[in-house]
Image (cartoon, rainbow, N blue to C red; front, side, top):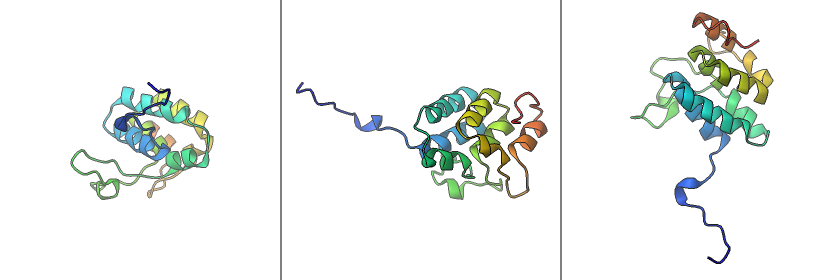
Length: 130
């Protein structure tokens, strides 16, 4: 080679928004390992506003048949990544999200529920963000 780095088309870096959506979808689908891996990737990004905004933004899960998260609500309320992770009971991912963006646990869904409410309702008292 001539010393120039060649980046394969599929190897472009993920954006905070795409990582947060994928982690959210993994949490909703009960895929703890995938969710934790994606949250670690978010943690390793520079702590810019785009990372915090991606974590705090309420979103609906995307289904495999519908790539548009906005149209995939299936009657579910939009949840932040922290709320989805807490509801799934993924305590390691909750801890990482608190490290990245501590204020995220106070976000409420349209019914006034926080991540703490969702963790406790799901029976995960250990993983409940404090």
